[in-house]
Image (cartoon, rainbow, N blue to C red):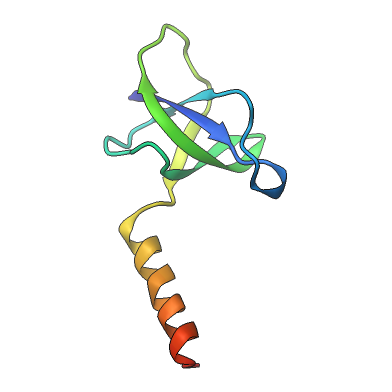
Length: 86
């Protein structure tokens, strides 16, 4: 498994000042991708980069939010909003 460095999204969408490391089996994360991590419960985070470190994380990235189906769903909803469809 790879080790990913992320920043946790906090109150009002502000990112944490510190970066945190999580295990991930995602091979295709890009800087800025949104992910769900298991830390203190489920938390939203922003992927920064893969890192090589001797540190062994105890927590995991469990889902990638910035994938194609999420983006496509968002664009379908925006299109409905603009066109006024129910």
